[in-house]
Image (cartoon, rainbow, N blue to C red; front, side):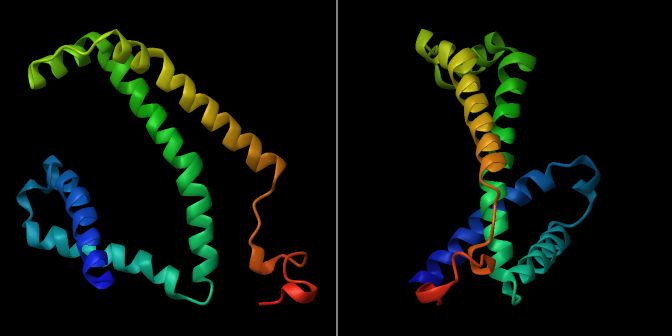
Length: 151
């Protein structure tokens, strides 16, 4: 069951990535099978990093950096692009055209002020946390692996 769940998740992730790649104008003339094969090989080669002896270290680094700073920056830039560059009036109109319901004042305030403010606070606190507590890998930390805490 776990194998089935893992394969299903990978197919979903790959499909989401490939839809974006297929929409690139330059690649529309290339066969979808070749694009899929190249993307799968690239993902496989990146995944080999995690199977080496230092794989746990790399996983820890990816988890601590990609899940905090990178993710928050992408979310903040998406909010800025949609609400301030594209315009919240156009965005509200698009939602009305797609759903038939105009978003209320709560959503307007959330999109324009609340969500970007929260993202800035999360980004700032993540940066401050990384500056105060230097990231370290527990398996290489002498303090963590001393005495009776040896694995």
